[in-house]
Amino acid sequence: MRIIRSAREWIAEYGEAPSVRELAAAVGLSSTSSIVYQLRRLREIGIEIETRGRPSGRCPHCGH
Image (tube, rainbow, N blue to C red; front, side, top):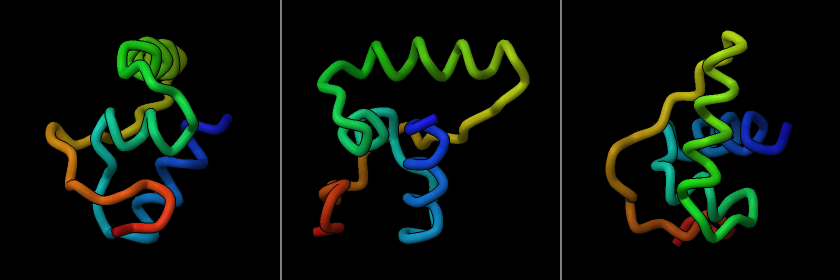
């Protein structure tokens, strides 16, 4: 799933979990509510994706 892969890649690159907004941008969604919904569904089946509360200000594509 793109959300899981994107979260793992973000953590590997930046050493911290992405915010919900950063995760949404990384998977190409403009709505954070869509990510929140998907994270909730993943949690229901036992997959926990860590996120931070606030965006870091980094671009999810280039890191700047």
